[in-house]
Image (cartoon, rainbow, N blue to C red; front, side):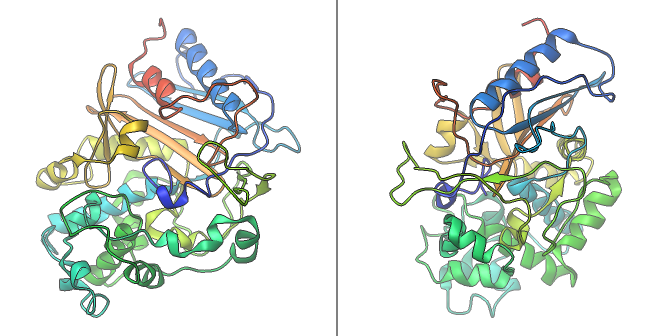
Length: 406
């Protein structure tokens, strides 16, 4: 799980699925006032994502005046059914801003400080790891800790045989962190930037230590319930998704994968899995309505006090891989700042086996868009040119900046 997926460690496991013909659909009954030119533009963009390898795509744009939803492709390649308008999906690393917000709410109440060290709250866990103990809460949330990603120590995630054998295994935060601490640090805390899911497993453990309850309870009481996110689920070890949902498809790399040719095998149904391997770094299930509502509320300052809101949006440079996908982007405390043609936007995408989500909200909170696709990697149709940058960038820019007359 990265801001666009699971990170460098998971680049090998990101998979594409069987692609069905693009399916244009009737407007959602929730779409509000029609905006045919913009809807047509977004429909074409969604169909382009199907050409690039998404089995099915659902797009949900919110503006001050209306809601525009389009879909393309299929939820199930066997039946040809379209993606449900109210589909639940695994959000992957969009879980991270939920966790960072819950932690920042505690900071705002004086329960802890962003300058507290991991060793202040979890001394036994990092007793033999001096660098890890020196990492601050801020460095966890902004990925400047230098801690390696524990996903690299879960090899079963990267092969079909391994996944099918272990897909219902439970991975606790303590186990995930211990895997990471057995690896060499990437750099001294605060000296560089590297996206690591380990950071958010530790952040969640600190939330639990501070509150005496799980990070899921903190997210539920601090975000989900106040915003009325009734389609959002914190599943823990539960393996299924609420209805309705699309089938989540996964391909796995062949024996000698390269970035240019992963040698993907045939797709499998990866919908059911124990998502605790993602945990506080990527387990949440939600809907496009809820993710749009959350991101808009967060950017508008409805969930945090002004001081913590400023910390949330205080950014640092990210790395070359992120710059290649999102040129000019920077990382805050669980949100990514991204330039768009009409200004700036905040986002945090995510991939988890079988699902990918992309999203963005304008800096003033006026427009937001969520895109969900039922695979987290993509095999384009023959002859389709793959963009060098993030493939949803055009759709996101049209949604946030388009007038419907482009």
